[in-house]
Image (tube, rainbow, N blue to C red; front, side, top):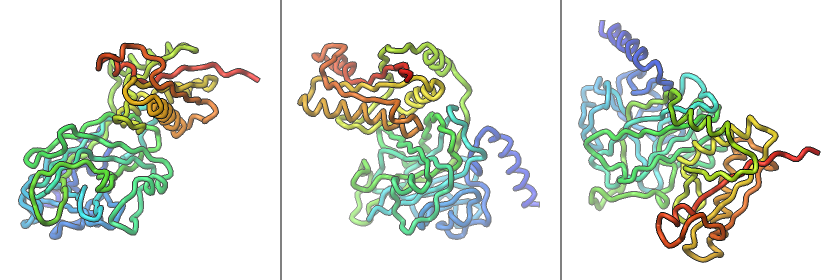
Length: 364
C-alpha cells in the first residue's frame, strides 16, 4: 500500500510540475532509501555527477537522515529529498549535480531557471556566486574531484555558462535562498550542471565561521526548475525594436555589462546579445560593427586597450553563436567620443558603453 501511495504522489507531483522541464526536480525519485549520504550519483534518478566526487543525497525516508546531518540542520524545501555539495574546499575539491531536461530547449525562447540553496551551518565560508553550465550531452566522469570549465565545455562540444552572483554572498544558513535568472536558449540545451566552476583563488568568499580546521562552503540544493516564459511586454517591445533597426544607425547596448576594468562579459549581457544574434541570423545580408568606449578615468593607453577588448568580447560572443567572423568588425575608441560629461559619475557611466551599427553587405 505504501508503494502505491508513493506512485500516486509522484503522479500528482508530475501533473503540478508539468511545465517544469527538469526531470525529478526536487530529488524525490530514487532507487533506494539512502542509508549513506554520498551515493547521489548511483541513487537519484535522472541525475548524476560529472566527477568522482561524492555528492550527498538526503531523504527523510531514512531514520538517520532527518533534518540534522553532518553539515548542519536543514529540512527539504519541498518533499523529503534534497542535495548537499561542496562549492569551496581545500585543494580545489568540488562537488556538482548534473540534471536532465525533458526536452531540448528551443532556440530564441526565454526560460526561467530557478533553484534554492541554503548554506550549511558548519561552513566556514559563503561564496558570491553559483554557476550553471548548459550542455547538449551529459558530461562523463573525469579522473579528478576537481573540475575545469574549459575542459567541460570542450567535452560538451557546445555549452553555455552562467555565473549567478549574489550581492551579499549566499550566506543564509537558516532559510532557503531562491536563485532566479532568465535565460534565452541557443537551441542545444538538454543537460545542465550546477556548482562552482572557479578555483579557490578566483572564488570570491566571505568568512562566516571561525575554524582552525578545514575551510569549506557546503550548500544544500532543492527544487530545480526550468520553465518557458510567456512573452511579456518587455519581450514584445524588444521584438518591435528589433524590427525597426535601421542600417547605418548607431545603437547603444542597454545591458551589455562588464566587471570593473575587465573585458569579461557578465551573464546578464547575453540576453541582449542573443537578441542581436537572432536579428543577424534572420538578416544574412547585414554585417555589424561593434564599438567600445570608456570614460576618461585612467590612462589613455589602458582605456584604448580596454575599449578594444570589450568590443572584441562582444564580437567573439556573436561568433560563438554562429555569426561568421567576416560579418563582424570591432573598434575601440577609448574616451575620444564621449556622449556626456566626464565630470560626474552619471556622465562617466553613460560614456562607458558598447555600441553597434548594422551595415548592408556590398554585393560583388
